[in-house]
Image (cartoon, rainbow, N blue to C red):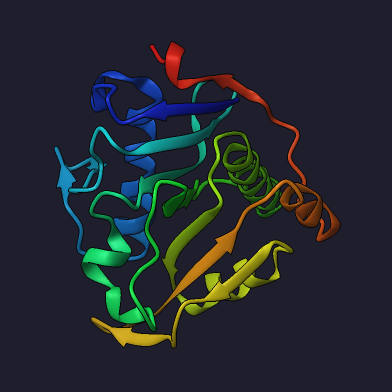
Length: 205
């Protein structure tokens, strides 16, 4: 199932969000070793998980986490402008039609084939969500491996500056242009999604 939830929902009262925060801890803290806040020893929740955040979450039939992503409005403080502005050759892109992709999280326990299919579903959902809500650009910060993938997905993407080593990690900033043609470009590159939003912001419960 595909869910769209905003950050005004009490975070740990909602099963889908609770499972997502647990999955983020398994991936970003346990697997990747990030030095980020963990609540109650189980939930990776940081200062950007505010009421302004949006979450796209894919779950299995039982509500278990499969993949998720957090979207931050760039009209508010976000990761690129507050923590990694040096990755941009100029000012970090911002505006009401620009959102930042963060915490792109694929469930660790997925088999390789399911991981690829779920990743493609999440990318497709990002493009369709943007097209439906007037988002014209996404930005994000990623390591070289993810940047290579992002640039090959078929959509119109570019680096915002040179990749740099920050805090011991090689990172770069990317910008993705979104328009009505983006879903077709993704499909042409082999990235397709069939899930529709079963849960919108207005009926989160």
